Image (cartoon, rainbow, N blue to C red; front, side, top):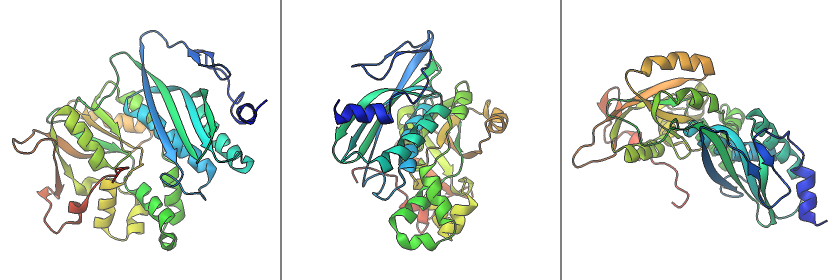
Length: 331
C-alpha cells in the first residue's frame, strides 16, 4: 500500500459516523450522497496556503479550525445547514506531529456541525489545504447578496476588528506586548460559528454575506448585486473592549473594524417590519447583533457607494476612516 493510502487510512478514514444521507464516502472514485427532497445544495470552496493565511509556526489545530470555519461561514452566509465536505491537502512530507492535531481539530469542528468528510485528495507539495463544503437549504429560502432594498437596516453579528488585531500580533512580534495580544490571536484563528443565526435569518434577512475581506469590501458586494447604496455610522460599529485596548485609540479601532478581514461574522440587511424580531433571535442564538447603517438609493453619479457617517454627519477630510480599504489577495 502506498504512502498516500496509508496517510488516508491513518488520519482521515473511519473518523466519523456516516450521515444517513451519505451512501458512499471515502475509498472510491467519488462519494455518493442523497440530498433530501425539497432542498437545494449550497456549495463553496476555500483554500488556505502557508505564507498567505498562516505562518510556518502556526498551531496546526488553529490552522485546521480556521480553514474549515471559513467554509462553514460561507454556508452561513447563504442560510445553509452544513452536510458534507471534501478536502485536498498538499504536504511537503508526512509529519505526524503536525497532522495529528490538525485532524483532531478538523474533525471536532466538523462533528459539532454534523458535517461529514466524504472525499478528497492528498499530494506531496507546498503546504496548502482546500475544502469544498456542501450544505442544505430549503428551496427558495437561500440568503443571497441581491435582495437588499432601499430603507432596509444593515446589521452585523459579533464584534469587528478582533481578527485584524490578532493578525497584527502574528505578523509584528513587537505587538505581542500590547494588551490582550494572546486572546486576540486566538480570536483571529477561532471565529464563532454563525450557522444557527443564519438558519433563523432565512425567513427575515433580505440579503446576507459573511465578512471575510472586511465589512466595507463585503458590504459593497451586497450593494452591487442589489443595485443600491448605503450609509454606515462609524460610531455604531461593534468593537470589543479587547480591540479598543489593543489599538489604544477609538478611531484606530474603528478603522480596524471597517477593514478587518477573516472575521467570519455575518453582515445582513433586514426590512423595517422585521427589524424588531432581531432582539428575540439574538437572545435565542446567543449572538450580538448590531445595526450599523441603512440601505439608500443610488445617486445618479455614484452607484453602490457607502457613505460613512460619524455621529450622523459625513466624515471629514482628516478622518482616519477615509483610509479604509478591504483585503484583496492580489493587491
